Length: 346
Ligand SMILES: NC(=O)c1ccc[n+]([C@@H]2O[C@H](COP(=O)([O-])OP(=O)(O)OC[C@H]3O[C@@H](n4cnc5c(N)ncnc54)[C@H](O)[C@@H]3O)[C@@H](O)[C@H]2O)c1
Ligand SMILES: [Zn+2]
Image (tube, rainbow, N blue to C red; front, top):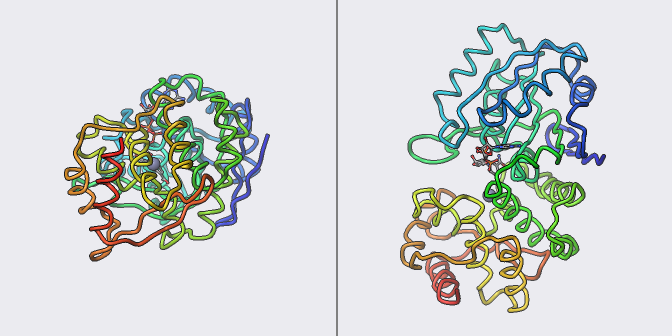
């Protein structure tokens, strides 16, 4: 069992360990005390893990209720947000009670925003069940729902009280969902740790690898919790990736789009060719795509509407060597050149 301590505006532990799932009751009792627990989960995860979590919590004296949303990104919406708040109110949850997010990033983001809003903030514990949620979305306190105008447009920075990550639950993940998480693991190694990158060559995602990714994310988040600077390195490959996701009408999944985005952005003159080839080889090893059929013009047009763009410039994360990444604010024209170069080198 590994404990990663996060010293953000709230201080909390991320506990990573094979087989800790049935001890979540004990761990939660230590972190938040015995109270009423609202488990929020989705239709895929509920039949697999909700009963085990309920049993573990009840054993320690928690009073447990459950709310299940339809699996999928479309559920991260305002309608479910309000329904969950009403459900909590109807069940008389108080400020001293706790919300549990049992699922992937969709459940985590939605539950976190509900917890941040209900009674102006209740306790909240993340139980990530996808690889992406383990290494990325469950740590760092970004919570959100999607609006009609776009993804993640309403939300809050709201840190959890505890994160419990048991990698054995990843065994039931569909291959394609697991691969999406691998793209974020590779991203984390590229931006933060050359040794981790070397380890990834064994093509085995272990608890240690997950814990190291969490540490790297923790370090970035603690430096810039509210995403005004350094935290943007976590967006490596995402400016181009988001554009590809949108162009495909979300048929190309997030992880695969980010993989293509990383392959494209690593083709800049800031990157030595050795580093560029290492990134592409790693993505291929994990059966992730490194190219797409969209033209650089089409990709560029969508990046122009990227919500993180300030006036005429854009800040992008660019790998310099494996394990290091810089943030560079560049003109949109330079971005266009980078995309042109990246797409033509595919
Ligand atoms: N808050 C953040 O910092 C942050 C960071 C990255 C991504 N995100 C958000 O995360 C979301 C994507 O998360 P995701 O990729 O985990 O998607 P997801 O939550 O939709 O999960 C993917 C699929 O896997 C299923 N699933 C989950 N756990 C399972 C398990 N153990 N066994 C079998 N099936 C399982 C789900 O039901 C779903 O169908 C997006 O909404 C994105 O915006 C948030
Ligand atoms: Zn991502």
